[in-house]
Image 1 (spheres, rainbow, N blue to C red):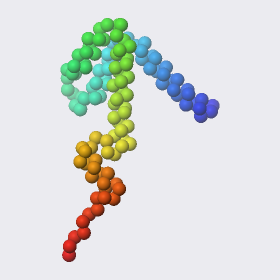
Image 2 (image 1 turned 90 degrees about the horizontal axis):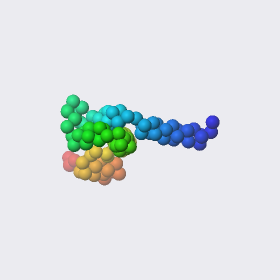
Image 3 (image 1 turned 45 degrees about the vertical axis):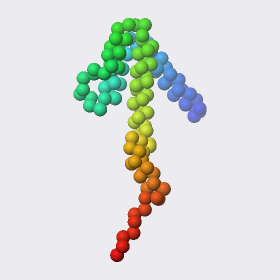
Length: 118
């Protein structure tokens, strides 16, 4: 199997995975959204009383809102993965502006220690 064909097969399997998610029941989608919301909380022991969790509970009661729930779950999962990748591959991600400036200056050699007078 050629490399291009393998890459295409990977894309189609990902697309079919998302298509399968859209056929999930409203209850399953709500559970997936709750899972993503719990993963986003700093402390996973906190109760789920966020406005988004309340909205999810209301929307999951209606079967006509399944595509909305599927999109919400996909968005939350993608956001979590994006943040994890940014933290892994961008060392300046999540730093304050001042810390980012110092780290950049140190990288390009502008943060030279001053010579001590003897």
